[in-house]
Image 1 (tube, rainbow, N blue to C red):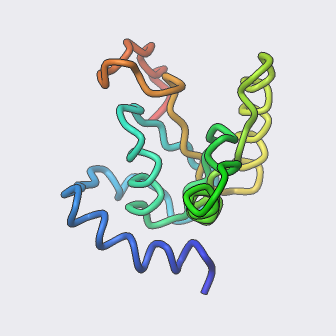
Image 2 (image 1 turned 90 degrees about the horizontal axis):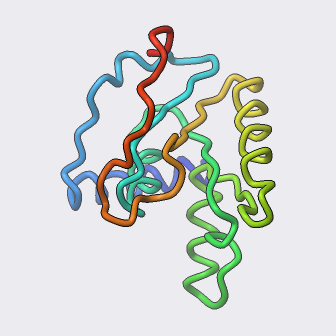
Length: 139
């Protein structure tokens, strides 16, 4: 059993109960091939819920500090986030955007699911930041 399957089997039901998650439109996600899942990033828990409630493993980028923390908490966060498919990206120095795009392209070229928050980081207010509507060809 992969680390992702283990985390999903153990934590998935707990997360669904704790946060009363509801997934709408899961039938629109193909069983194979490249997929982009785009969501609003309102809270830290988004990056926990998305990979644990989707049938396919969702690969997503996240700031590298989630996997470089010190002590037990840092090691547990690194184990969890890399286990559910987070790929750490250094967002300092202005190169984070390029690294994110290259990572997303690689994930899609491999036929996997790429989870992304188009607004970028969480908003300070916890609300949506007014992202541009998706193009008519996206679904």
